[in-house]
Length: 350
Image (cartoon, rainbow, N blue to C red):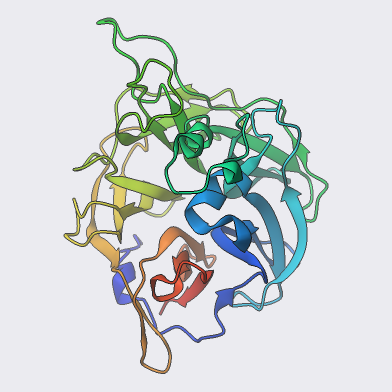
């Protein structure tokens, strides 16, 4: 029997305790998984409050790991999985966008990494040339372990990089400046499907400038380690410089369909800027279209006491039961748009 995903109708009020907090840090980008012993693990981005929200994530983010006996927490910090290393590495200063999967007894943690020659804290302010130096050098990497508690082996090379080749008419590729935001899932034939974000180089290699429109594409690999082969064509295109981002990706065996929840950044699909929206595809490679029930969540959540948190949810993640039914929606948010108070919320689903 097919599953009809109508997630907006499943969302329940959120208990105030359903938050991932890390004292002294911004928290973002939660990626969740349940182990064979029944413990729940979250791999998340964090960076110190002193660096600021917009400045800090691009230059000082690290990937931390917390554990809970319950799906709704509390989650307790366990360790740093991916932190800064020498600036000579492509991910020497920053690790962000974690995305965890398991295959054949091994755990694969995908992430975005970057580095830049100058410390961004030397130039206060948002979206400075130094900020773009970090943002425009982003690439996608991988760490592997046979245990969620580690140790983790981090590859020294990125597994997906910007495409620097030129098109037949002499233009740069759509992802020629940077790649980030990896979301992966296992395909029925054992291959790995990835959705990722890219930005076009429009400044002839000037990494200190904004550059082109943010778009989404597909890559496929025979194994989780790659190599990943980029597929032709773009997906989920909408209006503005940033139509969608923050993909969460899964394959439903019962429906023989791929699904992705993304953030509708410019209200191209829901009419609500920043809302979460559901897409589907029969192949995963192309023909991505709005699902039957596309709207997932708007720009607020209701607390259990009836009050409202007026701040959009980003970086969505679902956990499912054994029948492929989603049971919890996770997402990063700024509490009532307070930039000093970020968290990952655990939103119960009916």
